[in-house]
Length: 162
Image (cartoon, rainbow, N blue to C red; front, side, top):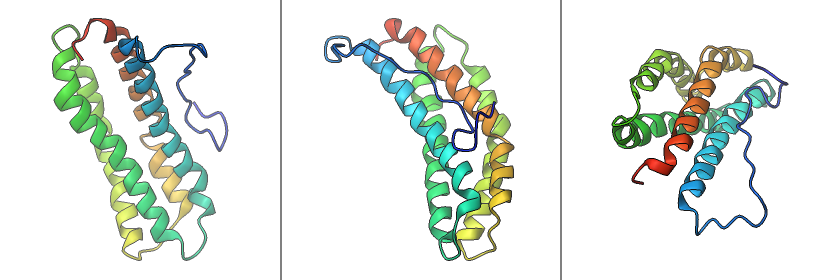
């Protein structure tokens, strides 16, 4: 899935005409926002991957904080936004349990990176290659899930009560 070091994980293509009226088509706007939010999450993973071996001595704690905040954003969105709010609504029309299972399948691997970055934040040793390896352990699977979720949300957007 890797295209290059700066763009380790692929983004979702997003396009609309320059004269698109976001105010009159709320459903399509929701689809755009979902794709853009997903891309922001993927960009944070790409940023971690790219910068991990470039962290300068003395900046490890700040980078650890960035990684922890980025991962919390992605995981919090999945656990609280999707699993507790959006999926129950969509479950009426689509079986969303595969996504919940996918979240659970890579949760421990995400947690391994979280634990490592917490140790770095607490002044533990830092190894940029290890950060990449820990991210590689779940990154492709996470990004594929994010992309699949946004496709379901976008396809179902015209028939959901949001």
